[in-house]
Image (cartoon, rainbow, N blue to C red):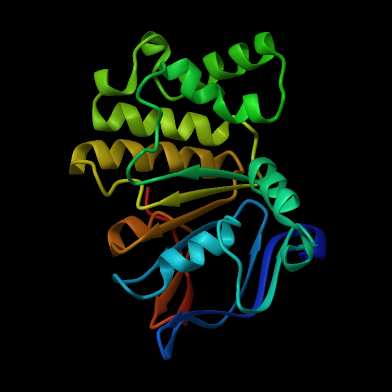
Length: 238
């Protein structure tokens, strides 16, 4: 078995905390979170409502900053970045999949997938080709000109997955990606994420459901803002 090196690390958190002032008191949302994620890993962060998993996801995606502790993304210390650098890191290193899809309803499937490429300054022809390929990859090649309101929930989430892949991110962050879907459609979406993992993508999946979490190779259970357990699964669910 080969020994992992620092270059394999995509994410490293060391004793990370997040506090929110609430009047005269302080809410300790995260308490000393530490873990390492290596390239190609499929990690689930599992916890009930109020456990701190959403706060952790926001910090992972550079949508929020920690109060104390260290957060490294591919060796880059996030605390040392200004707002513009954080924004650039977010655009280039992460692909986001949200429970509520977060698509722009007024534009087409193709244009929604192109959004991250627009912010990267890609040439229009290159962006169009990339978006078309990704739409076909998630089974929506026949829906390129449709707008999100004309799609089912499962189709909208497929668009969101294609958009998350557009900038070829280091990490895909999926926040309750099946939360607004029925069981059958949720299974189809998880199959796509499983396939991406099998292709070597690094994925962090946030969920409150054990059966969804078990699709990953590893489950980080969070409770009251702290890591309760870090479990490597003998065989990921497929």
